[in-house]
Image 1 (cartoon, rainbow, N blue to C red):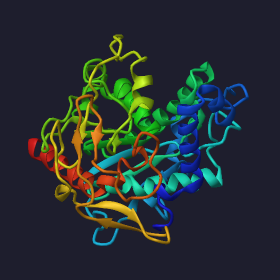
Image 2 (image 1 turned 30 degrees about the vertical axis):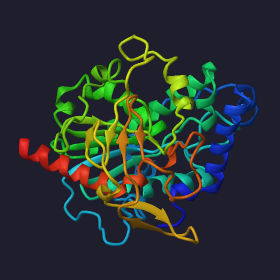
Image 3 (image 1 turned 135 degrees about the horizontal axis):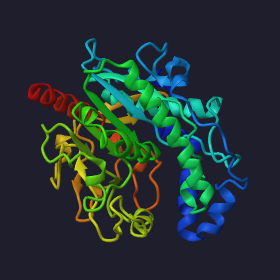
Length: 370
């Protein structure tokens, strides 16, 4: 079940790296040729909540045979007594330029997505039952263009996620604490869920243990208030939001900041120059530095790339002045860092054991407050 973790998916990573290098050297024109779909966006029927009552529409849920979210490295086990329900939104695993959105059934994409669920969502299986929906995710190229079709593709993907979230709420106990998590494209959709549901429903907001908006920038100044959850300031705080973007040093985050500084925050003000939320996953707090000795376990692939082991004290972390998470010298976790020493692919795996402890600690604090 531990076969080929997310950071050893050669086809996916190779295309990501090639795209990022091309962007730095040749710009958007080459990116458009290589990764942005040439066809027009295809309108498709909106997802229905009823569809997500079928377990076949889920990559992970408690009653799903072969549930990839139940994977754990040696020395760990999923909880036998789940106290929370976890809604996890996976990152982009559809990389073709054939269409703007992935089909709900595609063997190659499904295999990659299961790898993401194993390597990321599994960090939460000590706190609760993990639910991860299938959705018609926008293709990777949608993030490399400002074309209107890219926005339409992301809207379609979010519509699936929103329908799945409503079905998830129907199927878990009404008093069950909620952990919400995503990565990259999944984190972008999680932001929209927070604005559309949690911010407008106090009953839901009271159930949120934490929201892990990982691998996507969140402006402290222009975004947080609309997301309805404060930044997590203490390691034992619940009802709050965490976010980080990992870079080794020397870091060049210009691929992120160039787009971020041209964007508008949720409150209508420019994000330019604003500081991003940066939670140090080794401490559970912002603005704190922690040595590698504080790292409880990083997932690293074996020599044959078939399994993954948990290695302690491998990576330090600190937040810089802009809000990026710096992890020191480039760590030996695989060759798939992006240009600028961007360790985006490894945002969860670098800190897998600490994320696990963080979720359980915040859940304990939530239960104590109740």
